[in-house]
Image (cartoon, rainbow over all chains, first blue to last red; front, side, top):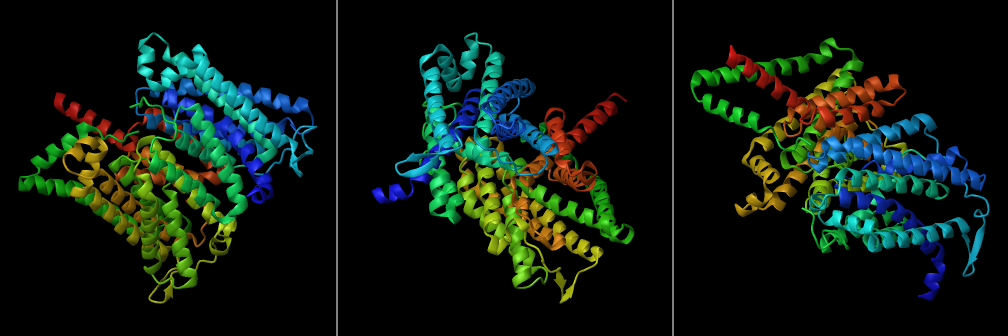
Length: 294
Length: 345
């Protein structure tokens, strides 16, 4: 057992790194979906904007470039989310499918605009200076950047958990997931909440894109792969649940990494199998709130 | 979006059906509907006689994607299950037809029938899980299934040719003779696509189709009436997969190359666009939607440096706002305007 663990240590650590990224990505998507009933299918495209920003600002050359990319990505994410909240407002009274279709159209547009700007080449982005080396972990060399990703993911998970569980903003978030109409009947302006939530959710997507660039690079089609993983995380974890997003992201991270390392041909089936298993046992996800949203 | 049909057109349809009981008006209705359909059929059959091979080929492709879109409409419009992974079954059909043609026989209609069968089997294997959910969850699950098939097509290089695509598919043969002329291939596509449309139309018109509409509009009520929504939705999913597989089989025979992207997310999204743009639940609307999608992507696309999807994305966004019922909704508006004009006259 210990031998097996030792042999697959790199894959397991990779799984945690991917899980961290997926958490940053999925928690925004999940809260937007849980609170506002907006399933943002453009989330993957926003992620890809971040990845290409890392290419533009040559994030691997200097910390200045890396931090600029992060800052610009955060700003663009915030603006994109705000714009999306304005765009979905006229559709608020229509079925939630209409809003999903709108974001699907936006994702097609964003992906095409990115391929017009950057072409169809595959870019790779080196980690910022100082994090490019490998660190010795239990006798094995492991990239320092990925260890930092794990740390960032854990810190963010803690911050999000504290905000959602311990602050009055968090109380608003939890109340909105449980019953949005009631919250708005209590005098909270729904549109402002939606603006803020979509802004922060999209910001997390673009920032995750920059952070992921040294791991995944930037290429056309990455948006779909990433969106799919994030959606699987939400389905497994349950919409609107921070804990669910974390557990789902860590599980899918391991499936993606350990699964691909151990049984490369079956990894896609394991991903789908995990999803199927969860849906059969817990159709609403592992951590869906007790108050069902109709 | 337009999952719930315009109730006013439904009732006028019912009123027309009641009015049509007298023999004279029934003959009128037959003339009004039958004659244009016959003219359209003759025009479609005559396409290779006056159009150049490129145009003929484009119309062949429109027919195939129209069949694909109408099969998706059976799910989206009739059953109320918005799928974002329907290209998976199209792709399964296309690869099946391609592989059968390469390794066994390209004698019509063996490859397309096996393609339809493979599409139905793939839908049966995956739909068992997908139809347990509904609405946006169904959207997510079908997206996952579509991505799974897409990745399989890309990874099983020894079988599918991987990202290079499956090429070298021999042309379709009838009675041992290969169909090489664009016109002959077109007629082959036309006959099978029309049979496909007929099949889907019969399904939608049957009591089974009525039950599907009932489940779409009020599932708890249908359940209390003794229907099993799961079983109906599951069968609808399998049928839709089978017809998508048929369209995929025709596609492989026409283009003679199949790429993993034909089973991918973008193909699924564009077909959903075709259905929504045309008007979900009308069957004929998605045919128009598919024509728009094919023309924009393949005919005008090259003039936009291959960025047809950009234009389609914009069309998609605009359609969500201004055409909630698609093209089919426009005819409803026109008919109502005509009716009010007739009433005041």
